[in-house]
Length: 226
Image (cartoon, rainbow, N blue to C red; front, side, top):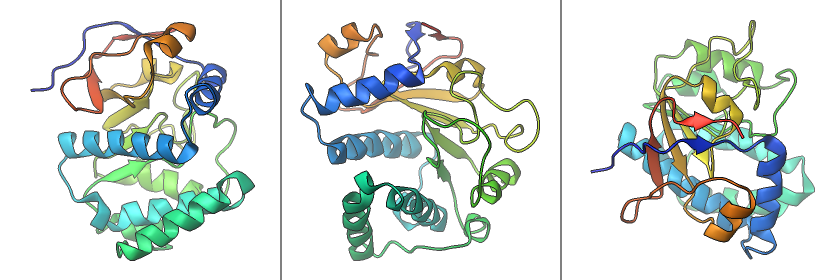
């Protein structure tokens, strides 16, 4: 049985997390495809563990992927990746939808990976409707690294859009980010692919993963800022 970690985990700033990603893709010899797949594996395991559902068949997940493709297609770095992923999902008969709020009505669970740890500023179109749906839904939501609309350092907005968004679950990839200190739900660390040498260089702890699990649950109050 998976048990919550009792170790006090340090957080990684957005700058340190970005540098760590680059390190993993250089000295770590990972491709961006591999990192995305390993991160996705840990998130899917957390979602199955916390709220068992068949994510590949939920309309909300397909809609979320559609949103992600929109972001990726604006960045030349991700064009090839998004084309390949779209083809793979098409072959798996994963449905894509354009109306996120409508898709939520037929979903069991939502995975929030709209924004990453580099997000800052105001939520711009077409995302306000998505964040509003997150605030209004009664469905369980698993956020990846950062609940969308939250500031990576200071957490949820004090007022306005996103201020009422509190996901049930948070999956911090590699290590928690500073906003995790403001999170009140069930918190997991995922991404079992960092070497002890790299963790030591960036001065954070690797949690004690059990068996073949790609995630570990960390207890409330177990995060401290570097």
